[in-house]
Amino acid sequence: MISNLINRKIFTLLKVQYSNMLEYRVEIALWAISGIIPFFMLNIWTNNNLNESINISDILLSRYFLCAFFVRQFSVVWVVFSFEEDSLMGKVSPYLIQPLNPFFRYFAQHLAEQITRFPFALIIAFFFFIFNPESIWIPNLFILILSIVSTFLSFLIQFLMQSIVACLCFWTEKASSIERLLFIPTLFLSGLLAPVVSFPVYVKSWIYLTPFPYLIDFPANLLSGNETNISAGLTMQILWILLLFPLFKKIWSKGTKKYTAMGS
Amino acid sequence: MAQNIIDVRNLSKSFDISSKEPGLKGTIKHFFRRQTKSLKVIKDISFEIKAGEIVGFLGANGAGKTTILKMLCGLIYPSEGSILVSGYLPFRRKENFLKNITLIMGQKQQLIWDLPPIESFYLNASIYDLNNVEAKRRIKKLSEMLEIDEELFIPVRKLSLGQRMKSELLAALIHEPNILFLDEPTLGLDINAQRNLRKFLQKYNKETNATICLTSHYMKDITSLCKRVICVHEGAISYDGELDSLLKKLSPVKEILIVCRSEEDAIKLENSGFTVKNKIKNEITLKIKNNSITSSLKTILNNFDIEDLFINEPPIDEVIGKVLIKKDYDI
Image (tube, rainbow over the protein chains, first blue to last red):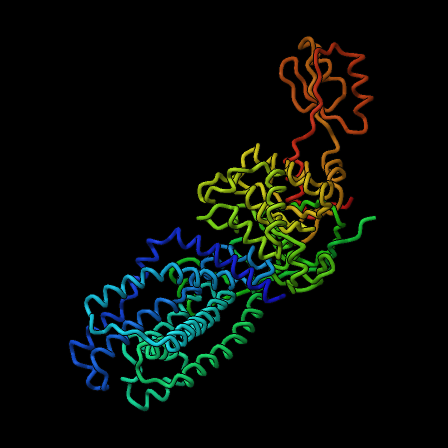
């Protein structure tokens, strides 16, 4: 019963946010195009034969970066910026006195944006295969489903990490500047610029203890068919979610007591 | 007798405010050593509000009216004291409490900017657990009361301020709350839109017996809606009681404009012992105490040749303005 009600709320939120996102379809197409960093990285890696040092073939590497592009498309998060703006403009106030945590709105916004992005991402993938026909492959259904689950878990980790930072808006108006601190490790350690396997062994062992390699590297390796420990990867993703969720709830509860409803 | 639906006891609220001296020196000092001080914006206030009452909160800018409303609806946490609204501690924001209240802030919107209001209404309906049939019924009823129809299907960004405010009201009332917190709901609206909004609130209060707490700088909002007012001065309550009593206390005299047949009559009246505000040719304005209006008028009509006569109440804005700058009214 309770889950039904929540589902109905989430479904309506999703429906409304999807309609809203369709109003911004051009912007979303541009956002999708702007996420082609992995293709630049692929170019750098293959032109310099860097893949030989990590024993990955050109084809597997190009599949990896295509999958990194896809995972990034469906796990990109900007909640800290939306919450910061809403908080400064006083828009959070009406949401706070509704019987639904405002973060569900942002969550639905992100999901709706991902749905809107999907066709544009497919078009980009289509052109990628035109230029790299040797990279075409069809993952088996089981791996595809696991990859979708893993990408969603990656999105959840990033959403929770940024939501925790967003809650710092209750203490400092510019929480987005704190998010910049997360941006650097996300960029370098997530596998967006280079597969984590390319890092020195002693660095890798530390990286795998952080949430970053599970944001892009793990789901991208899984989908592209590269060798990866599926159960360990999924377990780590779930563990990070289990760790971050109570932390978010705690900081949210403390933060709302500090809320001054400025701008309203 | 109606029960208290809002009970506030010894409520205080402090904010930490950082201050900065002007100029480069002040900026550098502020960067390295930020000075903050605690500012008490609400000072030990207590009051009760009965179910179905419409209460106006009056005060100058920064007096603390909005802060009180924000604490009553659970948006901000009180520093000291207690608040009970409909039996709940507002700040805990329990689901049943939230389903009972609404907060409307003039010029602040919850409607989704790029979509027609109807989308936001259905979204709010699902947030408040209303099924589609019930949501449709309430949207129809409220849109009839608010006299909006086609506007429901036009993107919010294309609506006028008045249409938007009506839609905001509909979105905020779709769950039929018992307690309405309205913070300057008529801000920026034209005269007709203001009047329609007031009419709607009166009707809503009459039909649902909802309690309404209202702040407004438009005196017409207060005089046409509120029997009771709470005046807030520098975070403390300076007056809590009937609006009529406050007006009588603040304006014990009425102004009477008398048009005499000739200027000689006006001069005679000027020298007859009444308090004269001003005299222009054959027109003379007298100030007469409320309790002697009848006898004074009788004397004037019997003894002077009068062409016309007007009794004026002092402008309400002027009267209320006195409240905003005074600390205490013990009536």
